[in-house]
Length: 235
Image (spheres, rainbow, N blue to C red):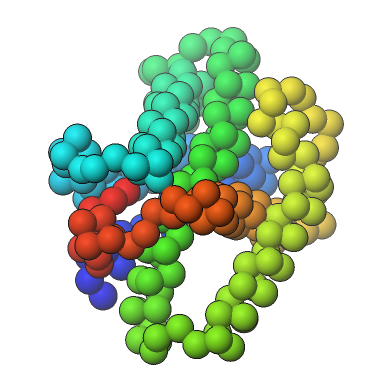
């Protein structure tokens, strides 16, 4: 397994950690903070791997797809910074010396930022979908695309997207993104796995929407040699 495949695996773990952190009422506070700390360690690792890409941003020819990708990365960086700062201000177990007393509003901002980060990660995944698919095909040593496999992949993506639409309503995802309170509370005693599947399908939904939208606009972020070879310089 080369470095680029390891990076994709670590990125997948990071997405899982974001979803796990949203399951706050399933975890105790210490576990939540441990998962959050592990997430930020992976974010640091991700940026270390991509240091060359950041240095070459201004040297690349800009088109609509790359501009969209840059905006997405910028928004993701802001979301992550908000999560980091607010996590330190509300920490009770790992970093109590940085916490503010009675910081209820900060807790709300931290929670809302978490949902936005998940959405932006999904969009970012959509911009890099071709890279991910090419890497998976290379890892599994699949031959050139076949019509039957293409049908299966597209049918699977459609099923995930449909499930993501249902999960978006079931989990009031849109309401949570609008910084409003939602009275829904997932019953982890009844179905823990469903929580993770639901949010994973939401990630798949918005990744698919982003990928298809860029394709319809004629501006997909393709797996070009400078960006997306297995040495992978694009975050």
